[in-house]
Image 1 (tube, rainbow, N blue to C red):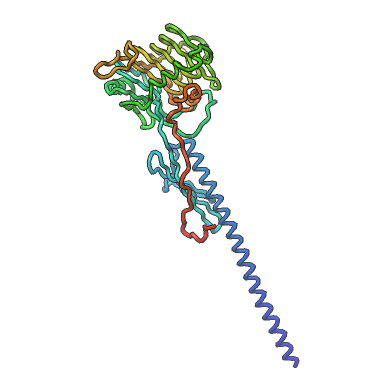
Image 2 (tube, one colour):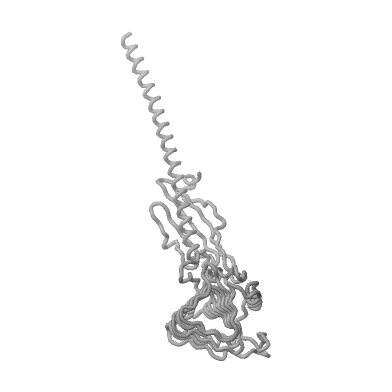
Length: 375
């Protein structure tokens, strides 16, 4: 009887121990599942952080930010690749890690639209083009205005250094300028020839027929005859750009400052000093002689256009008088979509063609252990 009682007690203890072990295993399984779930959540958050890093860097430097699979950017929390499919499509792969979990997000950074202006557009025939020395720079790489007040949109609207619309002018420009001083979206020596998509007639019309210019009131300033702006003459501000129309030639001498649009019907020249212009300079003249000397800086775009006496651009059979373009000294001519966009309130067409960058086709992509990544 005593032995039977002891056996009964032992049996009960063993049964309770087995039940407890099952309960412990269940608790451990539950805790493990909860822990793994938390790891999966963290892995997803890390993947999202990596994706955001890629998007931010792509928006600020679309043409240069690339991470190949061989040089994968990786930390303990994430890895990241950006692979160029073509000049307007970059594939992003972002992996997040946390413990045993891995999560992968892929997407496409797509750029739409192209810049229409170049740093320097020469529309019409040339008789001579000269770039003297190696201190000057003509760049189509999108540049922030020197005053730093422009907002970086991240579109990186890089364009060409010099665009000539006449093939004969193209040959003269290539021969006349130092290849190493002209660069843009196609690299060093970025010259392009052929028609432009810019409607230069419309731009000139919109400038001359701006309501404030027709009324002769600020921010439009109209001058008759050749003008020499000197010293610290200032036109407009980044917040309130000006339109300056000169029926004649324009010369900058000294530290002239301008924000807006300068339109001249004659020569455009800079002499000694450090003049600065943010926006568009449009020289629409007959047989003009353009010369950039000293240390000028232009952030926006420069257009030199040849016209006939009757104000038309002519054609190959009846060409307008050719122009000459000379650059010497420490000249800095920079295409800037920001400098142009600041003037778009005056002339809406000036920001035409500015690209947009969007993140598209965001999706989850299976990894080596997809059951550990699905949430």
